[in-house]
Image 1: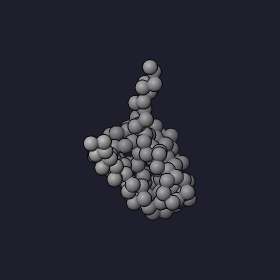
Image 2: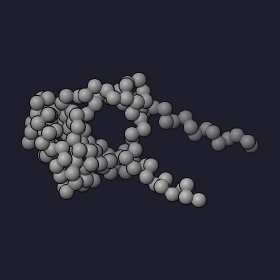
Image 3: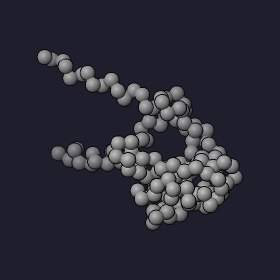
Image 4: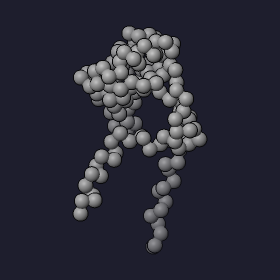
Length: 132
């Protein structure tokens, strides 16, 4: 009866499942002025991320949060005004620690418009009524 074991890890780091759905190819073109920052401590907020990356150039930082709990999802995006500053920051910060957690920094990939991923989840509600 071990099959139920290990099921707990599936929810962690979710979001991987929607890559490649929608109309865009799974890996879009690299965005030259936008960075993906992963492995963030839950204590890092937009302001902290902005502070770390802002020393390399004018940028806007956003930590992704869970829309129900409001907690950090452990990653975020930083958009720079210039590709050169973006590249410098990526190379400098990748693998460095922010609040004692080493972070992973890559160029973000341009994705299909978000609406394609938001839709499609509804409509499952009416199934319980069969077999009365």
